[in-house]
Amino acid sequence: YVDDLLAKSKRRAENLSILETIFDRLIKYCVYLQPKKCVFVVLSGKLLGFIISLRAIEVDPTKVKAILEMPLPTTLKQLCSLQ
Image (cartoon, rainbow, N blue to C red; front, side, top):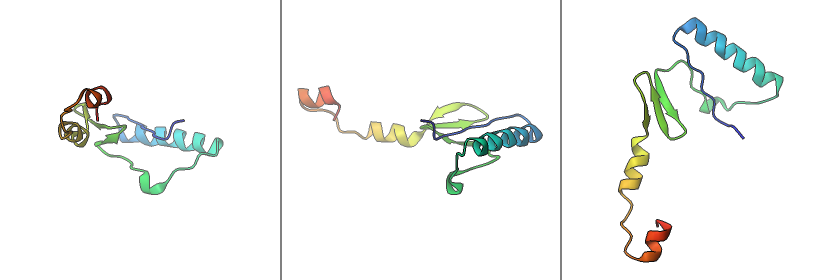
C-alpha cells in the first residue's frame, strides 16, 4: 500500500491546482490524511529515507550515521547476518 504522497511543481498556482486534484481523488476514494503528518508548500523535505530539495535527492544523513555507527562484525555469523 502507499502511505506517502509527494506533489511538486515550479509555480505556486500549479502547486495549488495539483493539490486540488489530489484532494479530490482522496475524497473520491475515501482516503484520509493525518494532519500532523502533512506538510505543504516547502522547498525541501524528507520522503522515504531521502531528503528531497530543489538542488538534489540525497540520502538522509541520520540513516547514514546509523550505518556508520554499527559495530563491525567479529564472527562469521555476524558478518552473514549484518548484525
